[in-house]
Image: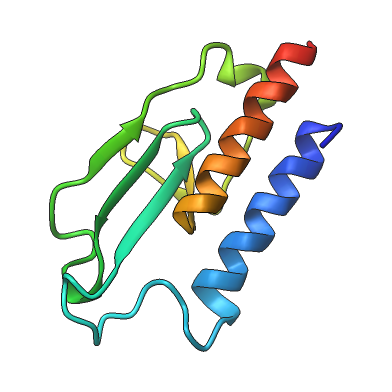
Length: 110
């Protein structure tokens, strides 16, 4: 990825594919809470997960990766807004890790 705007578009596309367009979307309130886990990638570089199913957004959120130094330089605007004003996307665990690595690479190029 060469440009933060391209990365932003890719993350938003992946989120929409999982969250809106996919018939087997990651967020399924009909599942039991232990049926799946929902992963968030934040514009800060943080990655978190929480129980899915009907418990999604009603239980504790566990962070597995912290903020990336200088994340502000990317100016990412992801589809969902968090309480602290940052934004996030719903992705798979692997996508979160991959997108975070691309964020780090872009920051290191500046």
